[in-house]
Every structure is written in C-alpha cells, then in structure tokens.
Image: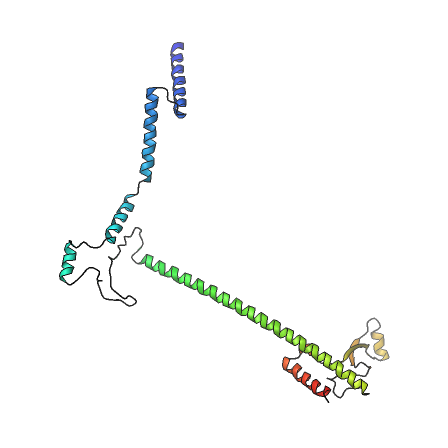
Length: 259
C-alpha cells in the first residue's frame, strides 16, 4: 500500500510540474512542445474565425457591389431595352416633381432585418425629423424672445435715464425761477409750479380733551412751505410725471424765464 501511494504521489508531482512548465511556455519534451504548438494554432484559428465577416455582411457587400455595376450590354434585359430605344446613359421612367431626370441607377433593395411592419422605419424617421424641426423652432423662438428682452431692457434703460435727466432739469429750472422771483421781491410765486416746495412735519392742533387721549402718542401731519416759510400747496410728484407732462412744464419754465 505504501508503495502504491508513493507511485500516485510521484505521478501527481510530475503532472503538476508538467502543467507548470506548459503554463509558462516551457516545453522540454517533444510531447510538451507538440501540445503547446497545437494549443497555439487552436487559439490563432479561433481568433481568425472571430475576425471573419459574418455571412449577412458578405451577402450585403456582394449585393451592393452587384447593384452598383451597370447592366452589361450582353444581358438579355439590356438587349430588350435596346430594342425599345434605350441607349447607355439614358434615364428610365417619367420625370417627377423636383427631379430633372428619371432613374439612372438601380433602385436599392431594402431587406428588413427586424419585426416591425412595412413603412415603420420611414414613419419613425419622419417623426424624428418633426421633433428635430420643432426643437430647432423652439430654440429660435427662445433666441428671438431673448433678443426682444435685451432690446426692451435697453429701451427701458434709455427711457429711465432720459426721464431722470428731465426731472433733474425741471428741478433746476424751479430753483432758478425761485431765485429770480426772490430778487424781484416776490414772496410767493405766480404759480406754485415755479418754486420748489418743501415738506414740513408738524404736530396736529388738538383740544384739551384730545390732548389727554394723546399723551402717550402724538399725531403727526404734513405741511408744505416755500423756502421763506410761506405756506405752499401740496408739491408735484415730479418722479411720477409722464414724459409729456415734464416736457410741457419745462417749456413753461423756459418761457417764464425768458420774459
């Protein structure tokens, strides 16, 4: 039994080392070299077969090459067409709208390789084109809207700057009118628009009974005066006037100053 065990152990060890040398590509014996050569050829054949074109690809290439070639003058079809007046270079069929001539090349064959119905691919292409067109139109509309917003923003900025300048000129004209009228001895303007009006805060006059009720809080109201303290009416809200109103007042002030 011990001898048989030693034999089995020797066989296992020799098999292990032979496999080890084979894996590393180290072939010492003729059998190992032959086995390594066979394995190498087998792997190369598998790789070569894997790189070979498929049958469907070969058939498609042969079909495309055959359709790309003109019909031979020796074929029966060409002879039949020649009897009907056909000559090389001529086109077949009637001229369609958008085409200046008929058919000169064979109509391409389209073999279906999927399970979709006839015309499905064409319909999908049309839908895809429609989606692309809609997307392009939406992009153009957004771009135009953006340009309109930019233009509108520029217009509003220019208008705001113009209104600000007009309001500033109007206030300067009122001060000039005030100075000239004051030099001429006027205590109030001929029109309250000609002088600047100032807002003054004052306490509301109340009776003794009301004063008891407002001991903790005082009621404040507004009043308006000219520069010399004379009472004036409510002032104009120049910043809220329209461009036409400011322009009219400005013309009135210029006319008044020229007198």
